[in-house]
Length: 172
Image (cartoon, rainbow, N blue to C red):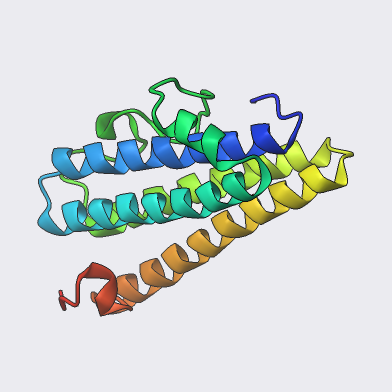
C-alpha cells in the first residue's frame, strides 16, 4: 500500500490510480475482438479521464496549479497501485473475446478494489483534513461503482444500455 501522509499524497495516489485505469482500459479496447467490448472499454477510459479532471481540480485547490503542471508534464509514476492489470490478458476472466458484460464486471471489480484500498488507508488516519480528502476520493469511486452496477444490471437483464447517451446515443 502506498504511504499516504498528507493531502498531496492522497490526491497524487488517486491521480495515479485514474491514470492506471485509463491506460488499462485504452489498451484493453485495442486488444478485444468484441466491438461492444471495445466500445465499453473506450467509455471506461473516458470515465477515468473525467475522474482525473475531478482530482486535478481537487489538487489545484489544495496544493496549487504550478505543481499540477509539473506533475502532468512528468512521465514519472507516483505510486504502484495493484488495482488495474497492465494488460487485458492479465485481468482475471478477460481475454480478446471479452464482451461488454465482462468489461463491466471487471470495471466493477476494479472500482470495488479501489474503494477497499482507500477504506483501508482511512482506518489508520488521524488527520481530519486528510480523512476528508480520502472520503471525497472514496465517494468518487462509489459513485462510479454505482453507475457501473446499474449499467451492468440493466444490460444483463435487457441486453441494452441503460443510458444510450453514454455510448454516443447509439442503441445496441
